[in-house]
Length: 285
Ligand SMILES: C[S@@+](CC[C@H](N)C(=O)[O-])C[C@H]1O[C@@H](n2cnc3c(N)ncnc32)[C@H](O)[C@@H]1O
Image (cartoon, rainbow, N blue to C red; front, side, top):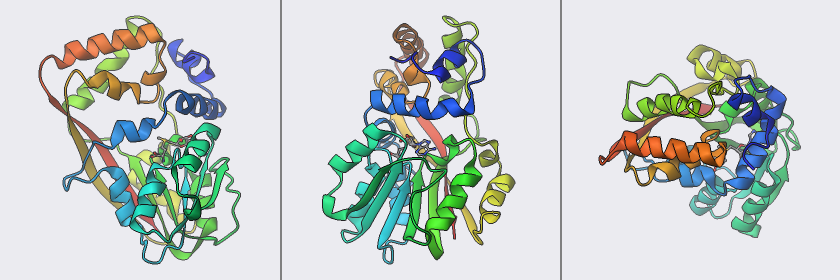
């Protein structure tokens, strides 16, 4: 159950989780939350009505991409969309969750799949210059050393080809969803007074200069950022379902989750509000 991870035990008791415990956390979370990322995000759209999956799939230069690798592919939601755009593509995916890789194998047409591997982004089990494109969708900000992962992406990419990655972004203007996310730790502390929110991943991801440096120091010559907002109109009825799909909130003990849901419904009241998330596409070659 939810508490059976070192990460949740640490955050609920106010301690900083150890970097080496996050992989176990992601494995447990994704086993318990089937299609969490897709369920949580596919109805959030940008200014043109595209969800992040469609947006990244449209960014990859698929005309020439015969072999595409997704790092942290989860259950194959993005690879499925890439195959829909280019039916002749050969896709590979790697994820640390065995359950997610099994779901991807079930979901994707066998004739398009080259390799689906349970493994870590920090050491890709693929030959140098094997891929025409490498993608990742909402995983790069999860790893403690992003440099290792970016270096591995460069190694397995053909020369001059692109690594396209969507990550979350901080520092947007005040919005109802930001207010909500600030409130939630207070509600959790009503039951777990020592609760300390977790801020995982590599801190260099969150600043433009250090993020750019992560790519250039790993052999990428051009790095572009494409920043955008995705949003969805939310009622208090669907809010609990949405919060359930978020890391940490979705792993709280059942009574804490129920308490957060009550508070969230009270907070939302009768109104619909616009839930926004700030996103960034990174295109590096
Ligand atoms: C937010 S989910 C996104 C899944 C998928 N890309 C999608 O958008 O539907 C992040 C994924 O990254 C995987 N992940 C996290 N750290 C990883 C690592 N170090 N190596 C491989 N996979 C990792 C998790 O298991 C999870 O499936």
